Image (cartoon, rainbow, N blue to C red):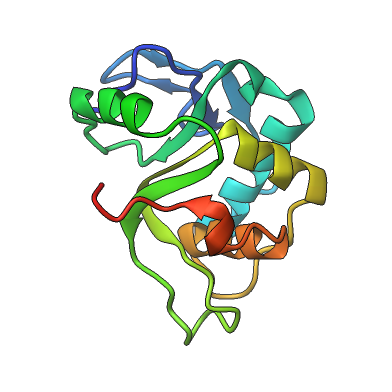
Length: 161
């Protein structure tokens, strides 16, 4: 069961629109009539819909979690108190992994990462690159940041998180 932040906008894929275990209802459901090739395609579809509807505009951060991730309530307090302004990207570091990412982009593990709305604005303005073969969704998101010229030096990437 996923412990969600109190002030959250829930985006689900069409296979998890209602979670019977937690009675989670989704604010937005992203569907794929042809199914998902992998998580990269699912995540890209989610960001396409978020950019299209501008549903993120009334929130400070967009946090992506796996549906079985458990979120410590202190995380929200930490994020809100530590980060205000600038382009913010946080999570548990996995990358860079140069064997998959020739651009040496920073990327965080897919079970939990987030960005503030300033980063989402820039991503939506520049467009979303296609998924690359064998690229995980979390690595793809790091690739998106690089493709949108959101360089590591432009981001607040907390080392002490």
